[in-house]
Image 1: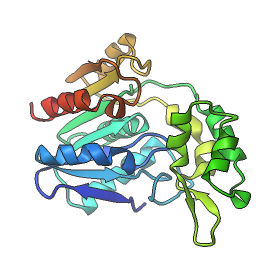
Image 2: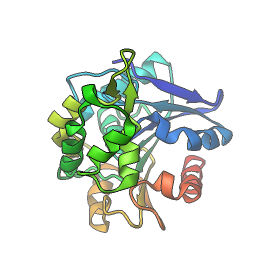
Image 3: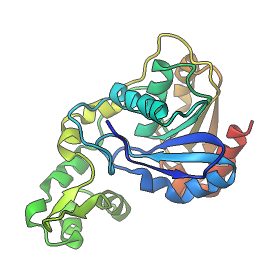
Length: 256
């Protein structure tokens, strides 16, 4: 699986960033420049079945972790810091337990290794009702999608994935059929045969319920050198909602 990526910054320790479900590397472009200014070579990566990376029938954290390992080897990147948000957080955790000792530090943004119930059913139903071959424009797609997702911000985020093809029809950047079929794989737990000793930062939004106080004991069983930072005023999208506080926490951890 060849992954689409963008590199920001020419020198410094590699920092690889993985987006969440339905997202793409574009979600991290603005913050990546700030990270590069801190002395890191930042690699923004589209995970399989997302963005401009390839589509594949296989979709699991094991496959996405293997994609990340292949990317590191292809680009000859050693001692990287791995950062993942939401689904990307699960990917970097899966990578850590599958390939221990091949990275420096881990940053997991608003995600725990526990199992999560499927909660994107109505979104997927709405996306699948949009008739791509008959679609006249993005506004029409938004009107149809609004019947299933009332939040304008969520709709705008998801509809960023809609694009015109060479034959002037519309298509999705993400692999909607596979994501619909395998959505349960996004919520599965990450398990480990032993503890992962690498320094790990778990960052959560104070207004998010993805990482609870009761999750911390299970997190520390897998990542005993983990620290937890709760970002005030942020929900699940910490880096977008509180970018300054997010960067302060991240840079402090990376340089410690």
